[in-house]
Structures are given as C-alpha cells and as structure tokens.
Length: 83
Image (cartoon, rainbow, N blue to C red; front, top):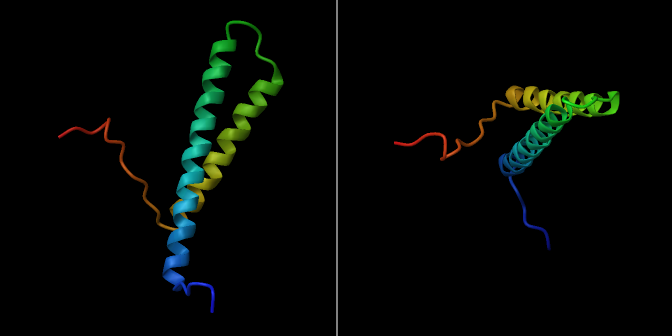
C-alpha cells in the first residue's frame, strides 16, 4: 500500500546502475593505489602497499566479469571522444 510497486525490469536496472557505480569507484581506487605504489617505488615498496594494489585489482576484475555476464555497458567519457 505504501510502497511503490516496481517491475522486475526496473529492479534489475537499479541493480545494474549500482553495479556500474561500484565498478567506477573500485577502478578509481585501483588507479590511486597504482599511482601510490609507483610514487613510492623510488623508495622501498613494502608488501602491504603491493598487496593493497593487487586487492583493488582483483576487486575490479571480479566486478568487471560480473558486469560482462549481465551484458552491461558503461558510459563514454566525453573528454576522450570529441566530434
């Protein structure tokens, strides 16, 4: 009565959008970890920093394969493609 009835397609679309947002966030986190590791590379890279980078990479790859199984496509970055 108080809840809006959603069709299964709308619920699936909402889940897909959240998955894409999570993928973008994890990708940003992975890029940041790689940059940090590269910046510290001139010094001494400890195992914890390397492990964090690999963990972020594995998270991203897991979410990416999950999105591929759902046939999801992200949006294009406007700054990369100009007409």
